Each structure stands twice: as C-alpha cells, then as structure tokens.
Image (cartoon, rainbow, N blue to C red; front, top):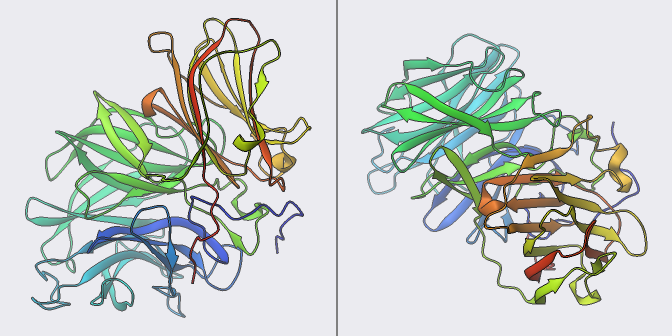
Length: 464
C-alpha cells in the first residue's frame, strides 16, 4: 500500500477534496434547484483506487462545498465507474411522477463480465439513489463513461470504447432503451485510451472533449478538445487542441442544467495519482471553468467569484535589478495573483509557492513567446515527475502585454494566460505554510502595469 510522505500539505482552500480517502473523476455534475451537485469517483474505504463508488458534495457557489454520504456504493455485482446525471423533467423514464420527476444517473457498471451502462434514479433531489440496472451493454470490456444530454426532443448518450478510441452516440426517448446513432474517431491525439467524453454546444458550434491516457505532451494523462458540428446524429470535427498544457487536468465534464458550459476536472495525472502525499484524503478537483469559443479556439476562465481581501495592489512597477519579492502581507499558501506585464524582449519569471529564504518555488516563466511552469525545485519533485517535458505553451503578447491570472492553493497552481486561451494546471506539494511571491527578469525595463494579490485562505470549508 502506498503511504503519504512527510510533506503533509494542508487541505485545499478553493478546490474540493473529500474529507478522507481516494477521489478521481468528477461524475454526474448537475445544477438542480439552485444547487450544484458534484459526484465523483471515490473509494469510501481507503486512500487508494478501488471499491469505486460515487462520492457526493454540493455547493451554491462552486467555491465552498458540503460533502454528503456516499451516493452510489460498489457492491458484490459491480463497481460504479464514471457517468452523468440529468433531470428527467417530463418523467420520460417513468421512474418518478409528474409532480416529482426524478434525477437520472447513467453510469458505467464495471464487473468481471465487462463494462456496460447502468441507470440509477433519485426522487429526493440527488441525495439518495436507487439502482435500476443495466440499460446498455455492447458485450465489451472497455465501454464506459456515458454523458447524457437532451437534444431535439430526445436523449443523447455519448460514451467511449476506450481502447479503440471510438466515441459511440446513442439516442433514447425514455433513458432506459437506447439505439445507436453513429461512431466517431480516432481523431486528434495519436495515442492513449479515450475516457470521459463530453459533447456540448457553444453558440452555433459544438465541442467534444475527451480525456487521453497516456499521450499528453508533458507525459501521462491529459485532455483534448475538438471543435465541430453536431446535427443530432453525427459529430463532424473541424479543429482540435489540448485543453490544458499542464500535467494535472483530467476527466473534466460540464454541468447539466446550465445555460453555458462550466467544466470541473480532476487535478491529477495517472502517472503518479496513487502516490501524492496527502492524508487522510487523496485527490482534488481543479477550479471550475467557464468555457467559450472565439473562432475555433477554446477559452477557459475561472467560474468562481472570490469575495476576499486584496492583500496587495500596485501599478507601474519597473522591475529592479535582481527582481523583487512581494511584501509579507502578500505571502500565503493560497493566493490569486493577477498581473499585466510588459516584458519587452526580456525573460520574465514569477515565483510562487516559494519557501521563505530558500530556492524552492514553482516558477512561471515567459520568454520568446513561450509560457512554461516548472515545479521541479519543490521537495515533491520526485513524486511528481516531469516525464522529460515542461508544462509549456505559446502565448502571444497583446499590444505588448502579458496577462496572467494565477491561482495558488496548498496543493496546486493553475495559470490562466492570454484571457484564458492558455491554461496550465500543476499539482504541487510542500509543507510550507508561509510562502512567498516574487518576480524577476533577465533584462532591465520590464514594467508591471498592474498587479493584485487576493488572499484565498479560509478555515470554514465544510465537510461531512
């Protein structure tokens, strides 16, 4: 059994993590009656992957979460793998009533027989569930991760044959009997298995997202997105790209019941997810992200509002030789750092999660149009290998300005650059509670047009 190291990082402040034990993929995301429901892959009996069940947490603001009892338990017949939840408002399934229509969960039932799609239903708003049984079985071993949505007066299911890298689409009128529509793939990333598909409209285009393991440029698992068109039967691709350029963004899906796509993902990588040094929990989500399109490029911005004090704000700073460290009031284990910088031709470095008076830090670097994030100096670098590749992406300057929105938490750093056209998500682990922020460049003349630091630390994150 893998045991935590002595790093003992604190609990995430603005990212959900279960009170205890293992979590991976978000499941069944839905906003219902004003409440966001997060179900997630969970081992209710230990800190390692296994006994897969659906954990459950709720929020009204996507920032503060209340954890509840396990929603769907594994049993002697199956483990409960990933899936989705929809509100059956017209009671098309017949599993509720006209006056009390049900929530329906479609999930992968995994057993020695293979993988098939099963249904469960809830008539109390998603807090307790009844299993209904298998509703779609192709007789294969890697058919999983159903995502269900309403389109053209019928239900559409998107699922994958993971090893074949095929997306299978089905339709239904009652959520219980499913007929095939079409098959898509392979496409885009050349390797890995496909998992956790999602298909959703943005304006007059459609976006298909897929989790790929392995095959991400940084090594291990990651997510790709494909922009295209969907006519109710077939998805036709136009362009693809990587959803996040960091090591740690996987299994993201969007919330049902929302007028715009908001995605929540697992902030980890299958290369080392089983070894991360947290206790008594293991695994957390990334920040929820609002997704938009500009042309065929996907933009992602944080979908949370933080009403907490700005602990630092400054404008028109010319970086001195050797750079500068922010004052002590702008230090902390959980911070939001927003900056607009004119680097000119200089190489720029923003250091976060740095231990006081030591050389360890997460280094966000910008040079020659390339943004990279380096966590290799942290004590956890042996646990979180880079697999020979930086977390990096091309980021152009806009009117000579680099725009950064950096969210630093106790176990992660997420960077949003160029208005959300580029994101880089990294898991980080250190025992330091009082951590600094500094900026430097290799040439004079770098101007910080504006910088703010917001404190994210809190002591009231709820859990069951």
